[in-house]
Length: 116
Image (cartoon, rainbow, N blue to C red; front, side):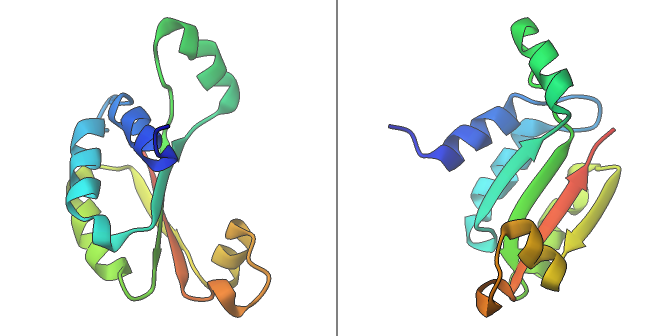
């Protein structure tokens, strides 16, 4: 059985549109695997459901899980990805997003990139 992260990376690779280059993003993520824990790309569920029969994986938001120690180096990697918006979930916001309710997740950072 395939590793779920590998499946997500394949979906990201297939999702190129406008300025989003899925192949480059996946190549950069794989080349810098030590900087992140997981990555997924999502979009509006209704639009995704509508476009799947056409062979289109219509997504626009990439979420990358890392931590405070590695985030600055990861931000250097993503600089050339031509995203329209980037922000980070940190501290309590990241802990809530990730479902941590103890100090276990206090060092986690979610980098969120969005393409129009």
